[in-house]
Image (cartoon, rainbow, N blue to C red; front, top):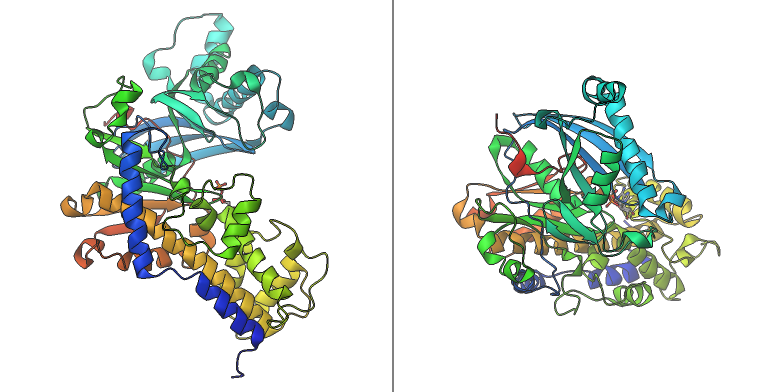
Length: 485
Ligand code: ADP
């Protein structure tokens, strides 16, 4: 085989900057544990550690029919889930794009009316029996009687915007993000706004829980995991990264100061939304290459979400773009000499993280697929095998670093809960495009976990780390309300 050319050698040097040693992993875990504990004791800490008021997770024996809706960014999803009580379920789902004018509507009533209308059509189409028996009959006869409890659907509301949550189904909107801007909604309770709109249509639906997507992943995994196991962590590695986990209520010492008392504390547990994208914003342990520094400086929130900026799908493509761009400008490296001047390589956010998955998956000896991807994504014609190998090496290093840092968060949460000392299995559900599509992302997480000294070999064998993709919109339900029939 020919010796690697200058572009490959230069790329391997860059790739080394993305290596995370075992020692760095361990220091990361120690700092994560410190920040977790700080976040549980006070508001305004680096890790927000938000109490969700969900005080138990399902174990797969639950039964019943539930509704769930998801207002994320561009789409509104409505679904119903029939839990069969044996870890299996039947899911019916609908999805509609949110009209742009409603995202910036004059009044939040317009948006919530639209959402309630979607729930109404969903019930009409997919649960017509129930709709006929309850809603239409009432409308025809003009009766305004209350629905009986057994006629009412409990609905889980996944709302992926910052809220100040005060109970399982109460939370006021702090601010809109992702292109939404309806000023009168700020400071209002999003569950009440949805409930009011539902009530105007006289639908038999009760907004029973307000959750974010990590809690949804935790619930979904916990219900579907084999052997009636209760899951400890639900984590997302998609556009962003975050995790929710089951914490001992006694450790959530800030709850008292928050004045939150109206919840069922019989389990002595509470699911905590860690908001770990902001781990180590002060950069005391996270790696910080020149490309990370550039990306952060030019982002719209410098100094914030520093963990997320090294781990999640939104950023990995951009880190790669910056590293590759630097090597194309380096006269010694001579990378991609034939690149077009209008290549996305020259545009901020010009490389999507799916490009990293595509080139990593290439197993052809002369990297044909990587060359095709370089042409398609970067308008790089005539890329040589060295060019392909160089870009691939850097992409690999960036994604592997992301997986190893993900292991820091997961290991710290596992260690914090001390479940390895007491439980037979410790179950972790992970979701998002990175775990779903990046080859071996989960494998790299597992590999890094093996290097964390505080997790002994015997204990490590208890950890089940599984992908729970495509389930995240399903089980956003109030677990303590599930009938165990
Ligand atoms: P979300 O987190 O927004 O619910 P996803 O889990 O689908 O949605 O994550 C979307 C993110 O994943 C985007 O940042 C995108 O760049 C990235 N992504 C999309 N496809 C892939 C892929 N094939 N491999 C790796 N990352 C991907």
